[in-house]
Length: 384
Image 1 (cartoon, rainbow, N blue to C red):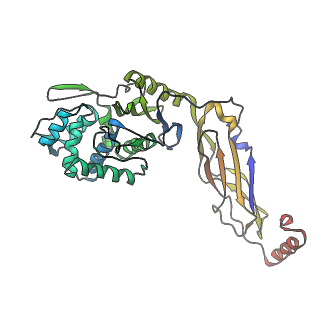
Image 2: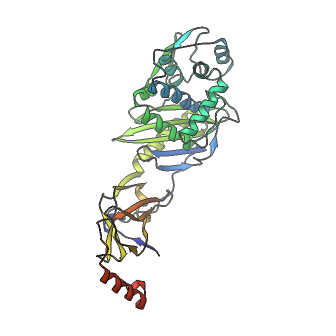
Image 3: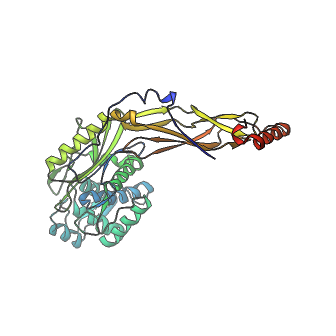
């Protein structure tokens, strides 16, 4: 039968100390995600799983496809891509940011990356799209397929740069996952995002990400703006060895984007903390056994258990142990026989496997017979 109980574990006493009631953070952004990089846990979510126009933040997927090919050897930074008349004319027509590539010129992958990441050049995106897929439409299909491979379930692309289109959408959650993937899997290329300025065609342009700097701890990634999307940014920061990822969109001005970005990053470091609830091997309770040399076995955690939560919300945490018991012996040490559910208001539940702390062999024939008689006469609850 299923066995469950809510625990006030001795090992969690320091975490379960009295706290104060807490409210969820607020933001003027229409979509927002604040995520812990190491665990992927959302500290704060506002419409983060809903589709939205990502504007130039779409360029992160264009860049990802280039990084992927650099990493696996299909491309080198010194390779050059030809600027077609189509790519040049498209760049001249659009109102988006430009690298100002020249028609019929050949531009290195290294420079195109700088043009896309630092200058947010839509013309550079089109050069990449034509070089890698033959056309922007075909490249957009590659972007969508790659998004699916990465588990980005709310993303679809019809162009390489994020120009407004009903078929071009992402969620803040997908952008956060994509940012974490880029940081983790392409560490050798992440420095492109922190280049302060880039000059091409004698036009010097500063990095569009004005949130970067030592006072904010932000070291990347990509801003975005269209009339349809408002102002947005996908950013990442590192402070005291802890990395956070922030996505906001739908803000009204560049000034508001800077202010909200800084405020939410600061809030993440100030108001949220990672607590170690249990160390590997800690026992959280005991499970009843049937037919074992011992009547009970310790329930332990195989790995350390950590939980991100608001500092002010610790007292609202609940821990529930459950297992289907009594468990039939023999039981091997390390065998999973239960689970621990950790619940904090406003956060997804954390389920932790519980394993047997030791080996317990089956009892002998005589003991099994006696246990069976006791169970028959007095019921299974008296066995032990």
